[in-house]
Length: 171
Image 1 (cartoon, one colour):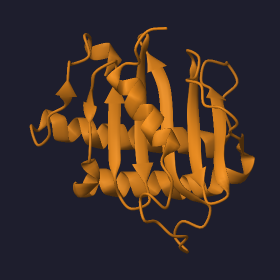
Image 2 (image 1 turned 30 degrees about the vertical axis):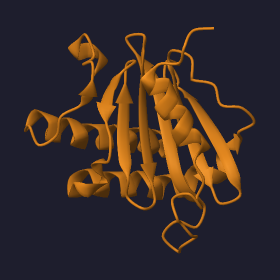
Image 3 (image 1 turned 180 degrees about the vertical axis):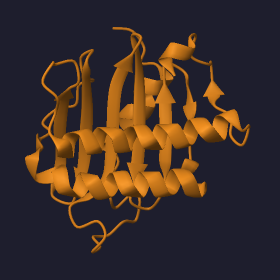
Image 4 (image 1 turned 120 degrees about the vertical axis):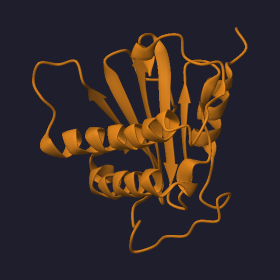
């Protein structure tokens, strides 16, 4: 078996982390979900967005690239908090997570860190029938977080770590 890539290792850490490790406790703002790991494949490479209730947000791309600790930037933090708010609404429709596997091409995985365990919502974005309005809002909210990160990168406010993704299509 091949050695896991840096992005795979970071994803595994994000999936395995506990609320206790992040010193989080249930709040009225986050009654169901305290974190989310959103993953999809673009141009054959993984894109993993991670956001937690304490404000930390990171984006991992490809095999060795990404951004860590972006919650300090208000546009990213606000978009991530909005995403977590939508996760609260979708938590009940997600099934319990028994073992985490990356999503197949054409799918987006929303792995919710809930106060009563991990749950997963797998969305097929390649089907002709559009997902429900709630799922569309959830997906678009995750894309808004990524957009806020890209705006900061293009303004040279942040720099990604590791090897850049080879094509602009993968970003």
